[in-house]
Image 1 (cartoon, rainbow, N blue to C red):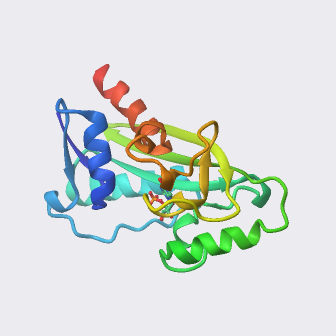
Image 2: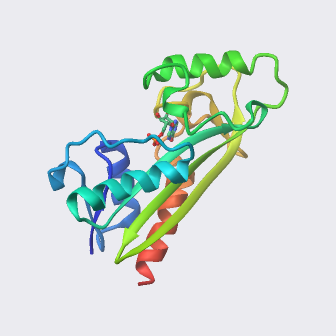
Amino acid sequence: MKLVFATNNAHKLDEVRQILGPTFEVISLAETGCHDDIPETADTLEGNALQKAHWVKEHYGLDCFADDTGLEVTALGGAPGVHSARYAGNHDSEANVDKLLRELEKKSDRSAQFRTVVALLLDGKELLFEGTVKGEILKERRGTGGFGYDPVFMPEGTGLSFSEMGPEKNSISHRARAVNKLAEYLKSL
Ligand code: IMP
């Protein structure tokens, strides 16, 4: 089965291709000839994932899936959430992490979760799959791997930040959990 993944993020494509395995041919946006900067203007992860998937369906006529992820911090009322990429500025991870650490300086509750929503449009149906991973925000950065908020996020029961993990991040991550649910659904068809 061929499926378009509405992303041009190489890291995400690799991760998703690994999870879905050889039964599914995952095609990137660029490979479909779409180089658009797809709008993400909804105020929820669900809304953004659906917005991206519908964009591809409406403009290119292709069934597809799209994802959106946010870091939800309890003491900040769920922020940065849907605004995670632009929390402190324009896709600047360093500034985003600095702002998060500053906002949490005087808070005792450092619990947080990553949440990914995957929206699938297939054969006239619209489905959502969610993956979460709970953990806490460290007081300072640890590790060198990963991206985004990885250096300061420690998943429950691991003792390591996402940045200190190798490929095992991909087996427990929010995105992996959501994509595994997508895979289960597709395999059940
Ligand atoms: P996106 O929806 O996957 O583009 O994610 C939005 C923002 O959330 C990114 O710009 C990152 O800052 C953050 N983010 C998403 N996934 C991860 C992750 O696995 N680790 C760390 N940060 C992430």
